[in-house]
Length: 227
Image 1 (cartoon, helix red, strand yellow):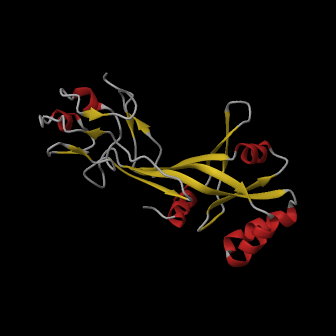
Image 2 (spheres, one colour):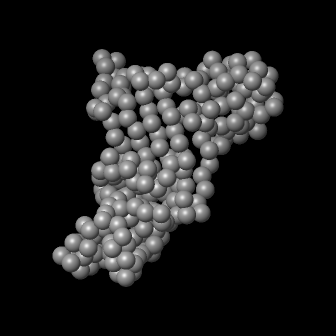
Image 3 (tube, one colour):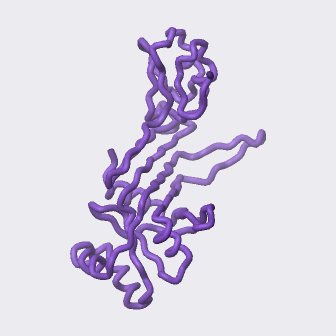
């Protein structure tokens, strides 16, 4: 499972990402921002206490962040079909808490990543620091044209601070008749023969093809039911 520093490095490679919060009116709000530091507690961000972003973080206590890094933009052929260059997406969602000034000072003494925050606090006294301390997320590494490997995606989910995650992909029950229809329909090479057949969640895009073609109703989806 990915560690917090590894997750931070992925976001750092991307740079600025989409940060979404509850807006306090039953909806959501988003803006472009970035994490500036990490440690064993979580990922750190900063804003000013006069901004709606700060109010939403403190009052809602929730944050969801996602971003993408790719070698080149998507291109389109004459049939208007997209062609994606290899890349990755990473997302994380969870609970945030506000740090006291004493905590920020203590962390800055041990972690040089906080230098920029001390600078900002001195220049902008209303700067506040928050930590995403309990969260789950996913790295979604894609190579849809299979340039560098023989399958399209490789996904890994992670969590920290007491949060949990649901493994990707549907499952196949003992009702499987081993006909192979699911494997034939899977374009992600995510299904392996067996008794029953099995889905490799790290390769599964959850497209639903296996669920759609299974004659025995053995594929259990998270989202829908055949009953």
